[in-house]
Length: 364
Image (cartoon, rainbow, N blue to C red):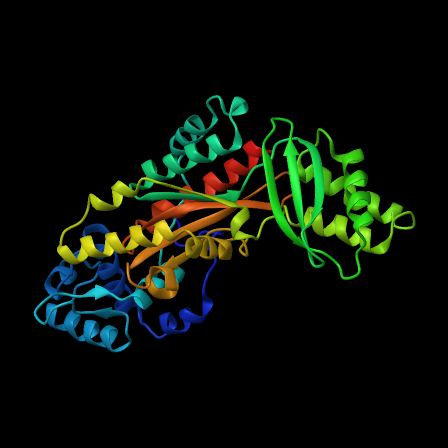
């Protein structure tokens, strides 16, 4: 494995200052505590740490270092006589600065590609994304999540319908007969005839095209046709197409697969309550959609640990997500894995990263 951080991993560099304060001995002890937690979920004592270190240290010396790590807020004792566990701050520091992540093996890549490709060419986008959620759940033994813009196929018709002086309804119909509509804020002073003019302009140009294709074509043509169109009508056309570029909760489709995986490793009543809280969080969807929307701001993988985000403040869960893009490099969705804070980050980060890139290739 490489010692370097994975290139897709967005690093919270503000935490790395504390890492620089740790000497080599402290880092190794801290690493052993975290890796034991990720592997077993149980506290680790000084005697066990001393046995696993690549250097010779007595349990007493290890206890002194553990005391220093605890003072820094990186580890804690769940019970008076127990060993130590990493705090959320400690997990963040470990993920940002000490985690060793290797690339997927050729066999793992082939496994993912084999499960993804199949008959994908004949599948609807939503079916493919459902399969992606199942894939991520199976590979991670956690819950797989996929968030994407609700899909409209090749367009047949678009209509602007006035609701009042400040709002209009944008109605899209695709060639399969599916209908989607969203509310649009319209420019002040817009005449009713402008809605008809905008509808006619678009319908003469969008038929048989995807939203992405239509948006690209109309954008280039508007520059040439602005002299022929009223300025407010031009703004309406631009805003009408922009509403389909994502960013609205109502325009998003959320898929969560493999929730039952999160129950398989429950060891105590408090763990069960934590999982129940997470299930409640997943049911609300709105907060999760807002959280996943943050991943769209990153180039690669984003990692959220426990209470770093309000959604998981009670359930103590972690989320690893990455965006996927269409042929125009526009983000059309994000995918990832939800699980306990002791996720196998080193394994799941490259899985999420590679799957996101593969989905991007398949949809283009």
